[in-house]
Length: 175
Image (cartoon, rainbow, N blue to C red; front, side, top):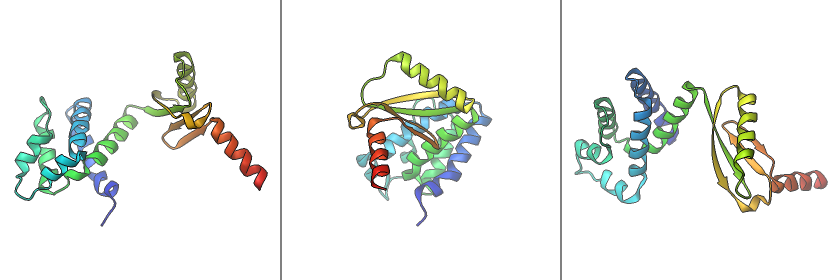
């Protein structure tokens, strides 16, 4: 069987095209995120995978208030094709397409301890200069890094952590 991302890609592209045509990318983003969270829940998976559950009932479980008709039809198509389990992948790919269209780079900064706001702004400014785009920063804490930070911005990973430096030093001394 094909990989979930391979199967999800055309659906994500179609969803993105539909949302852009209607000028409702942000609304679709929220609705897809909700549907993906629900479909990823183990109890919801059991219900959504039940053979007696109709497509309309499955869609009813996944739709948030205020969702437009095109989104409801999109979920109906997924339900009819038994692709509702792909919703988490579709939502992730949709967000990537949206960020690319909006010229936004999403970066995750993982540090050993909470970083001050001024330092995060400095990192954001450096990334904006490097990529020539707006940058959205998400933060995380991982005490195993010892110190410093790891910045993951799409295809670029910058490891400035002490753990990473020690690992590189160990490799250099061993080789």
